[in-house]
Image (cartoon, rainbow, N blue to C red; front, side):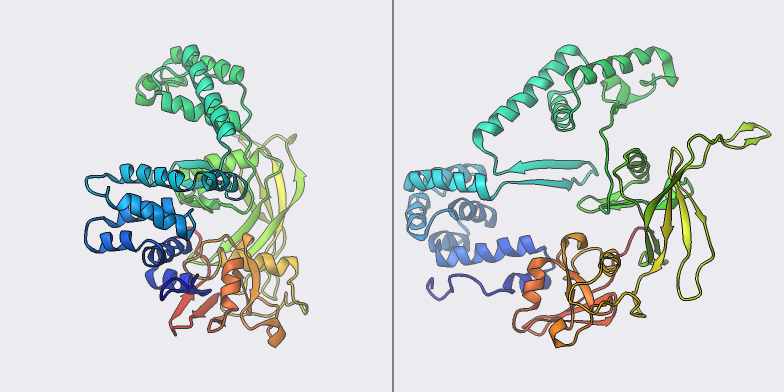
Length: 460
């Protein structure tokens, strides 16, 4: 025990905070750990925060730096910091706290660094507010990270010397170098391609660098070099946008909304990758999935020329969806042919997704669902069904609302996607989940509060 606080919060506390404050589980973890730390281990910092000597940001920075210490060393570090709080910026306090960590426990600092390199290494991918993407790695060994940074800088300097992107800032060249190295694009290939692109500038408005294009003047026109993109269930492309019938946004897990132009670019790149996996989801007017089918390779019609018309040969129509048979009488949606750019064809058999009613057609009598049932539930739910959790359904467990050992069915009307962590919390004392309708999940917490998660809403 730490005073009147336990050594750790009970399971589910973070979930209660997450749902009540409508913040992510990661944010709830950080908040509860911060509150515990200020009272249990760093009461001086907590008092300075309460007195207004420290802002919440400054107190959080100190707490984050000192959390790697054990209790004894944390007390020592706090004493060294308390007399130096006045006049410090957040960055200065962060450096001060980091210095105190190494000062009070130099041997432990080396062990913690090695532990972080071994246990906390991760790569994070996310979408910035402007719509562009970000990619970062954490827990890197210092020597390897320094060598990698040098490789990026060296490649960027070579791009600058070769004048492949006139007017580009070094930060932009470093980003280009970083991506080229990761995607296996050789230095010579990039330089040759960009020189060819610059040669097209003489073509005037029809060239790669149009005279009236501000981006051309800076030399930052996107390169035709595109790495292979293998699309799976992490990207959603509205068919109407691909066919040019509507400018509808797409979506990507971890990316959020994708503008229609990006949808078309990504879909075309994915269509050129033989490893891409294609599925077709039919939604209602609210964007809720009501039918789904996975594409199976069919015939490829590259050699067949398009039929001629009065105005000459017609270009093939990509992203075509044509019926192969009539919809069935038992709720089936029929079988369809999906044609991708280049003539690649797939066959898709659509099956209904239980959202409000369930005919138990894919019910399984064992504990684990069959592949079809699992996949349809993943498509319906989209993410973990605990409202603040955004873990992808494909990375979550198929979990029974009414436990299987208590007579619960392995069926879409009793199953939902739960991340492993939320699955465990749901099984903790005082937690329940019910499904009044197949696609609706009602969570009740030990405090008596209820939170409802409906089915995934896809772009419409």
